Image 1 (spheres, rainbow, N blue to C red):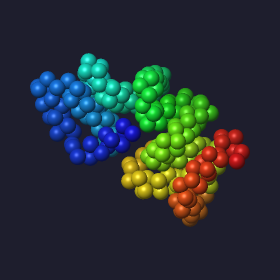
Image 2 (tube, rainbow, N blue to C red; image 1 turned 135 degrees about the horizontal axis):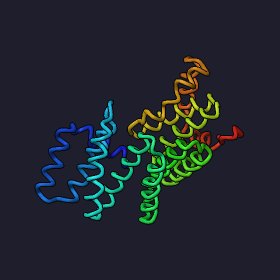
Image 3 (cartoon, one colour; image 1 turned 120 degrees about the vertical axis):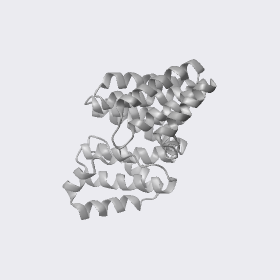
Length: 242
């Protein structure tokens, strides 16, 4: 997915080097290359330990304009995705939804199914921020089902973690802990990046179950076979019926 790819690249660069690289590409007249570099730079600034939202937004807007000029779907998609996250972080949920939906529609038209896993998950974030838990869960499930169909390991791991967060919202603490464990295990197997935001509910689970029980249930989830973990995730609904 785009996020993990950008993390992989940003691990190898600091902001100063990324900015210098973008400026060099600008001087060379490489519009497409500069667009991609500035999209990465914006993503990096947003995901620093202390995010620099203003710089991120400035670079991402440049990247989007350049990507549009170069007709580069990759850099414009990266920019649109991250600008949506900037808006979401600022509490501008409507703007975030608009950007995520525009990105989703464009990628759906292009027929690039792996990227739709990402866009459905970001749309789920926006719906949840609006207080629409049922709609958010539906989008997260669609993303998870697509990941399962495509055998997209990172998408499966993300889906297990995200559905674990919905289980926590419904106070299904045991299922939440097990799904988090199953998601962590999938990430270990696929060697993909763990999104800490998906573990924000873990303190709630720990408070409800106690630390020892939480660890035991997470280990139970980690021990699940891949098909077992997927079936376990599918069994949960916000109604609590299994």
